[in-house]
Length: 292
Image 1 (cartoon, rainbow, N blue to C red):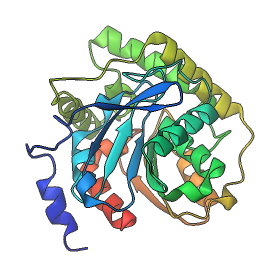
Image 2: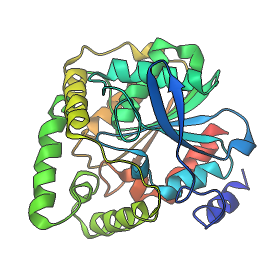
Image 3: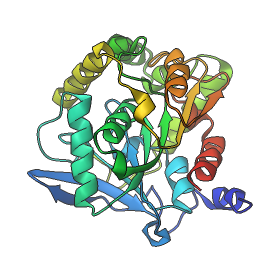
C-alpha cells in the first residue's frame, strides 16, 4: 500500500510508454476490427479494461488516470464498434455494446478482467457482469447509474443542450457536461481539457454523427428499461461520482451502491459528472487500492 503514492508521482511523466504516445493497435473479433491502446502489459495480473462514455474515443481518457493506473496494472482501452477507428456499424443498445466488449475481451485472450466504466461505460460494465459474471473480477463504476435510473433517458436532452452552450460560448461542451460552474469546477474543466490535448500525434478519429445518435438511442432505451437485479453481482464494486452530476443525476450513484451487495461509495464535493477527472489524483489512489 505504501508504494501507491510513489506510483502516482511517476504517472504522467514523458516515457516510452505513456498515454500521450502509446501506439493505437487493432484486433479482429468476428467482422469487427477494434482499435485499442494498452499500457503496463509487463505488470501482468488481471487486465483492467476501460469502457468509455457517450461520444468518446480513445483520446477522451484522462492521461493522468490511465498513466497512474498503468504504473502498476495492465491497462487496455478500446473504441466501441463503429466508433473512432473501430470498424463496423455502431451498436444502438447497451446490451449490444456489452456483447461487443465481451467479443473484444475474448479476442485479446483475457479470461478474466477488471472493468473501469465511466458514464455509458459503467452501464456497459453492468451488462457485461450480468451476461458473463465469470469474466469479471472487480469493477469501478463512475458517473453512472442502473437501468431505469432517474433522468438517464433524458441524457440526450442534457447533452445536446450543452453542445449548444459550448457552441455559443466557443467552449468545449465537456466544460458544461462534466464540471460544475463554480470556480473550482471551471478550473478543473480547463485543466482536464488541456490534458486531453497532450497527445498531438496519431490521434483517434472523432465519433461520427451516426454513431453518436446510436448511442443516444441506447441511453434512452437503458433509461426506460426495467431495473435489473443487481443483487446477483457478487464482485466488489467501487462506485464514484460528484455530488452535482447533471448528466446522470447523483441520486443514481447512491441507488447503484445500495443495490450492489459488495460496493464502496465515493462522492466528491463540488463536482459533477467528471468528478473522476476533477479529482484524478485521489481517484487513481482509491482505484489502485481497490484493485489490490
